[in-house]
Length: 392
Ligand SMILES: Cc1cc2nc3c(=O)[nH]c(=O)nc-3n(C[C@H](O)[C@H](O)[C@H](O)COP(=O)(O)O)c2cc1C
Image (cartoon, rainbow, N blue to C red; front, side, top):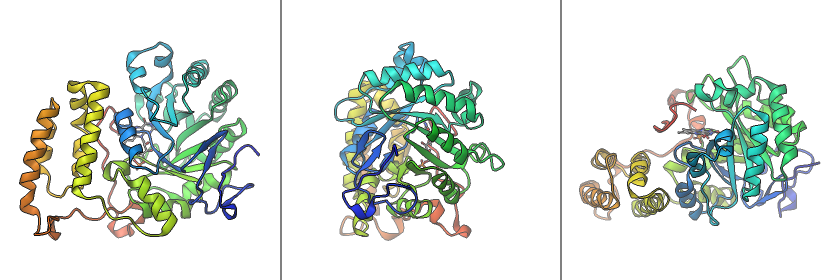
């Protein structure tokens, strides 16, 4: 038995199977890597950089975070852009780097290099539907060629001591749901866990996340499966655990809406009580910290430029925010950002009541994970942020 979820609560230990409830497992093991949380930050290319990871980590509930996907060959060629993607520091631990590529030797050597610089685990991208990645046999294309993919993963697992995981979708399309077979094949070559986004490559980001599909993967293997897709609330995380039997959940866009989603989920799973929504002031404080870190890591001009697409995610929970959104997408300096924010805070006062809260009619509607909405009310999809990729 290679993989175990360790819990101090012995009633929750599941030594022989990973199906069933384990969402309050307090310690999670990924191969030989002990983790303090079974909640994970999903890779979001263009966003899950060091500043974002540190900002989320500071709010609690998260242990293993991951980088954006990185091209294995670019790392081996010491491409400065690839190195910027894996930039980290001692507070950013434990850290997984997500690799993509289809040349077994390159993937193996990149994994060895990452191990040598102290990265905690390697994740392999098998879910990216972007043509540029699939054309060279990486991303979702890996889900079709089981033997080739298993051989590639075997080479990586045998080369490094740190855990190797894979992130995949349910399959290429509804006719080709390969995730259960692929996960089993990868388990046979020693992968430590699989992360499953419960959609097919063809679906892109539309339609509802298929929890039954994730459950099929959980039932096919005897290693941790981490469920992913459309979790925007602690209740959504709980439902993902309960409906799929997954051992952990991974959250991407939900962390934009609520950077506290990890600590809130821990609290909710432990007590059944839903923590209060963060206040406007708390959100502003976190957003400012995030920008400060972007500037530290990327320099003022580039950091501000990158923050143009991040700030509107924070403002989605501010209530009326047109005045902010229109201006923040052109910022070039910290001073300009603070001026825009100051003006916005004043402008927003017209929407507040006597106690300084948003008047009822201006409050953003409560977040609901799409798979929890009644079919009649289902939205097509939660928004996909603009970035280097349009569809993932
Ligand atoms: C802008 C963006 C970038 C993404 N980048 C990656 C990536 O680099 N690697 C990856 O495996 N998945 C990537 N994804 C997919 C997410 O990790 C995740 O599987 C998907 O967004 C569903 O989870 P969510 O609803 O919690 O966001 C990306 C998604 C988005 C929206």
